[in-house]
Structure formats: C-alpha cells, structure tokens
Image 1 (spheres, helix red, strand yellow):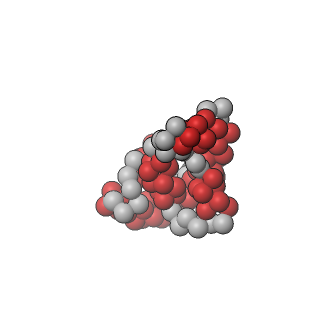
Image 2 (tube, one colour):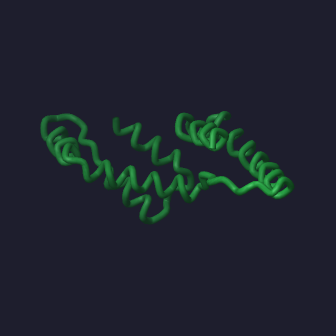
Length: 115
C-alpha cells in the first residue's frame, strides 16, 4: 500500500507532462509486473492496487461532490455578476461524461485553472 501511495502522489501532485508523472507511470508498470511475480512465487495474498479506473472513479466523485457543495451556486453565479470570474465545473462534468479526458491530470489542471 505504501508503494501504491507513492505512485498516487506522483499522479496527484504533478502535471501529466511532468517527468515525475511520466516516469512514475513507467515505473509503476515495471514494479507491478515484478510484484505480481513475487506474490505468485511466495504465495502471498494479492494486495489492493489503485488502478486507473479507481482514479477515474475518484475524480468523478470529487467533481460531483464539488458541484453539489452549498457554495458552488455562489461561486458559479454571484462572482460573475460582480465582475469576477465565475467558477463553473459543468464543462468538466460534460467532458467526464463524454470521456474527452485521456488522463485524470487533465481534470486536475482544468480545475486548477478555474482557481
């Protein structure tokens, strides 16, 4: 679980084009291949692994939670009325639904841009 957390941190705290993120993906693939062979050889119980599908599920849940938050309506409507830039996650939700994103970090980057 500790190693999985390291990879997850690489994905959560770096942009998709960052060498840390890119190299973490390659290292994770190599690590998992060897780890699975190790488990099989020593008859260990497989451990939970954070898959890309798990990450996508967490991203969708996070964006849904964000859009359901009580302050979202204010951030979306009131800020733009007062001359500020409104915070609108509906384009992100739409892109998630149509699977326009190819990498979870694209969602993070788009949300960061809004802040």
